[in-house]
Image (cartoon, rainbow, N blue to C red; front, top):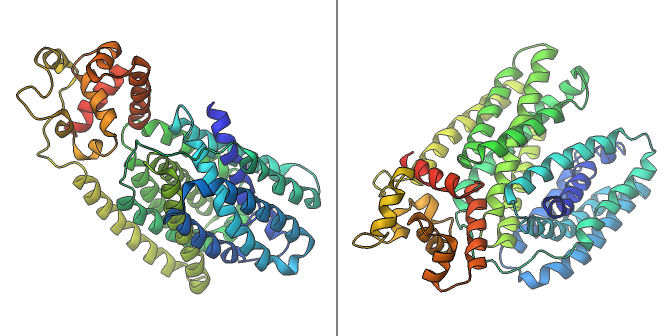
Length: 430
């Protein structure tokens, strides 16, 4: 089920990285810096989707938009002079396909694992796609055919009653990171292309970061964003050191930073209550940051010292602001959640009897993650009830209790009840 949910997303990302996002197929045509023709209409369309497009309209629009993106991809190969127009059409149409693929990811029994599998598989398949010794006249239709996977997939769009609603505080950091990432690649990639120890090896660092990030998700999701910023700062510190070794290590660090950032962003979007709105707004901000970074790199040109100075200033400020935002998510005066050793006492006395309701015993950062029904089920579990007892207490079926607990496990990135209770206590004490 994890692979099934990830497949439409994987196919879309491989197409995205092979063609419109300055992919190897596009650069072979000599269409340098054409990415903005794709990104600007893509951002606008994503913003419209996230701003209130009725969800029932997404599947038909994804079919129509996907067909337009497929046609545009085929036309790019046949008529390179029209690349700006074709990329603009692909930017509008593919936005609907992208959000649909993200919504299908949400159907996975393990959302975090599906996100990581999707990112790793997409980059691995892209490497294979690049390496296969067939003419580019064949690879363009193959890239277009990849879009058929999310277009034809059964829609994952559905009303969501559960999930978070804390998307806004962290999107500015994603936007800033994409700007400095664009600056970095503009200042570094040409040097790396000439000095690479082994072309393509940089993808290994991206994949390694995603896999490491999946483990770190079990502690605190925002830690991935902090790691992405720190790795990017490390990469920028190497830019001013002459020599092929520093160029290679700098790009490896940026690829690791991108891996942490991409997994963080996917985990954040998939945790939201309204997946379509989250993907629309979240990806619009992300792509706007990429477009701004690309524009800035074109304006600055080869002034690497200026790039490093500006980017490090922005990243250092971002780390400070991120720390303050994360602190605000966990106020120090929040009542404590009992640790594992205190569960027996709670089971005897009952949560909420003579004390505050369970919802207010959760720190605000956790409180926003759960729906009202999930909080009710979690309160029963914290009191030591079995699933059957919780079902009787809440007047719902035992299977419903198990479903709610599975969602709670996913949101907390844990594998079972004991790990959940331990993590609840840990997050409160931090």
